Length: 243
Image (cartoon, rainbow, N blue to C red; front, top):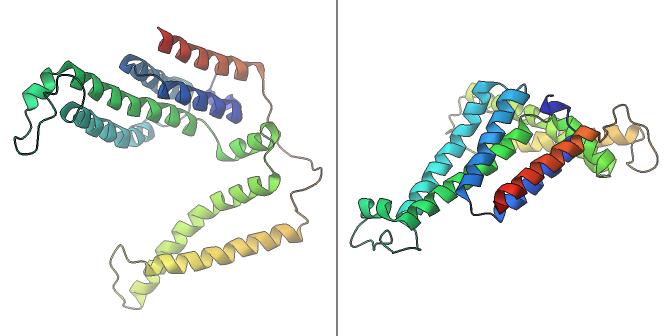
């Protein structure tokens, strides 16, 4: 069964509980097992593109490598071989031979990969609109906030397009701006405020107030396999932490 069929709220609750359990665990093995299980779940049980997964994992891999070197060279525990002063320089071979430093380095890098794995598992297998719908039906989120979030979400591509058009407008006028100039950003923000006001007035003119009883075209439900996924993921993570 594809992970896209799971209830988004139950899936988010599962990821949150697994993340809380990992935050209390100091086992590098558990971190890498969770990362491996998340990567296998994305590759085998989702429709996500493999190239997109590799692109999203690249920043996590860089962060993990950076934390690995930080834990290896600047560990404050163990025999203190890696904690050398700046005047004496860094003894790389001593840092590697320090088992405490190596354990801290693996633990830090593994934790980054574990959290990145469960985050990507949720992001690549969850539709944004269905997630907001599940928050309304299972978490009783107010429709006013839910539809406001959806309006802001769908406004983001328009904001990106408006930013490019503002930059092109300056180029047409012969105004050369550096890439980091805030003038196009200011023009984009002004138009975004106007669009948000237009959306708000349109919702009010159609009688939307966010209060009272209303019907829904799409209603999300919690089914038995959602609870099985929640119990299995949390139970296996707890078992891995205890063992």
